[in-house]
Length: 121
Image (cartoon, rainbow, N blue to C red; front, side, top):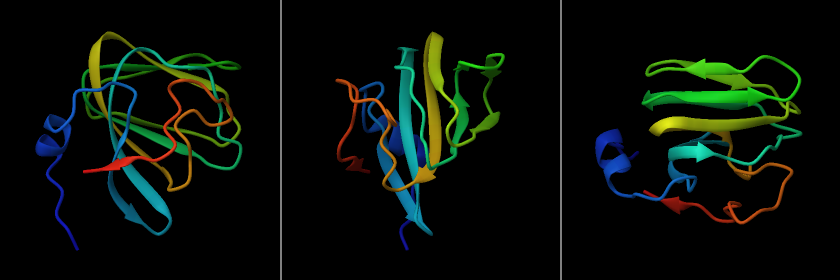
């Protein structure tokens, strides 16, 4: 067992769109990410993805539905197969992500933002 301090975790990196692995449980990963601007449109065919906003504001654009805006303390589960694009256009947002450990950050899309192996905090 290892305690994780979220303040220290977020303070340990500055890169945006480059999640850090904070913990793993039952095949799931808890990732910390700093987001700013627009990410790529993508989907996760076999996995739901939970976004929990710790600081700032995040808009989840959905290809086939209305956008959802998340403020501090709010979360959203994007179901498997739903095409989405996170956007933090009000400055940097600190976000916790919960998804299966093997899930790539860009889902079905390969781009320069794709993280093959996450750095552990």
